[in-house]
Length: 199
Length: 370
Image 1 (cartoon, rainbow over the protein chains, first blue to last red):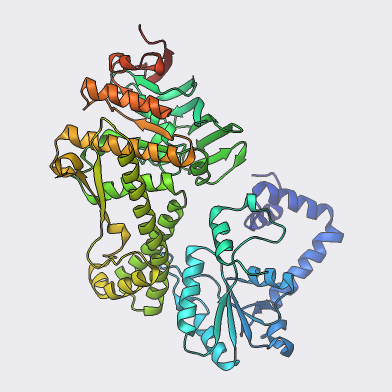
Image 2 (image 1 turned 30 degrees about the vertical axis):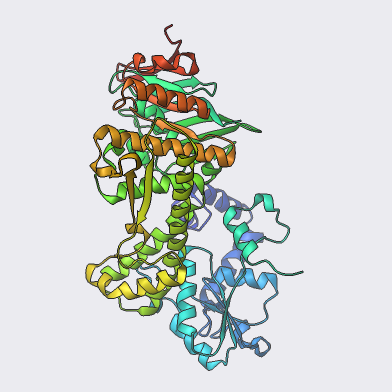
């Protein structure tokens, strides 16, 4: 608890709920914002209000944007027949940072988990099937996490898409760029060895 | 050079409020009356391998009462190359955390550091009780040979729990089942192959050495409907078993239902039919074979933990056990009620007296009596 006035205390409490922040760091952040009211706090408040009013899920892919269709889905140049399936928006952004992918995305919004009561209908899987049919996709790239749930979801989607006449691929697993073998775990090394290529 | 524990310090770990001991790599004979805290010491050693240790206890159960402030094991492991410092701590209500050489590390990292095999009195009835104990016994031996076995088991169990939930909830989505069955089949096949590999290494280790302990012929028994290892065959078998599984509300075939069968070779008698002493001798024989095979393969013997091992052995077999352990060069940790049980070892071992005073365990290294 701090001795801050009620309004400021309420702000600290809200900030402390953000990922990566705890009560102490929230207090520090709020104090910093108050000190920099003009340069930081007001622009932040305005930006937050704007985004709160306009942010929404893309009706097509589930990406976050400010219109019914996100910039990627409205960009015709990205309709190259490839759909990259990711678990959430953070993964989409990570792929975009790389800049290597020129197709469109599909954000599932999670992974299948019977134990957490998350089934295919809770994810955007039916919508993906519709898109594969409707957009004339030629390839679905599964960029899902290499966890049990991620891989179960990948197998599920591959099964659902089978027979729709598109190729289903998944991201390769192996040695990261600039990575040293010595630092890799055994599982990654054996995956990399299995996926070796001729030079 | 065989890795060994050079320093072990326990803080608020069960009956040990504060215990610090130094070792030089020789076997360790722990003796003291019942309830003195001997097994607690070797349980702490067993926690230096992945998993929940030889008592399969949750972190919460290990907390010393009444203080209830959490516990800590600190150990230095000497071996080839650099030594390692391991620290395992658990705060009340928190899971265990591991620091390896001052850095946070996952539990599986322990498997690469030191290999530990053990035998505890609870396993005395291993051959006559349910298959689960035998499976666990085999899986621990398998893990000691093939450290990635642990990951296959975790993946298999996680996907099976998911599938069992679908079965229980009577979910009828074939695609969802197929996806989980594929995962189970890939991990399950690896489990089956790893276990078969471990059995063949154990069998070779038994054939290669003359020992005072009886050889056991081991085989894996799969439940009807479980095919030979292979992801495709196991995927198909799981799919075929779905209607039965739905009725039962759980997965009825697969490596989670395998059993380990042992035959006392010299008598051609199933282990379950043997006398109590013979059953114990078979278990010791397998643990020693496990240790010999690991030594042959890696050049270093594992740590061997033998709780109350002297209990069912006559003096001759006990002496033979000590000779075999010394020949292995393993830091074997053995417990017994009195120093006389370990007299035969003399200065081939370090002797540790453990006693209980005022609700806490005290341990000190003793010179063996001449």
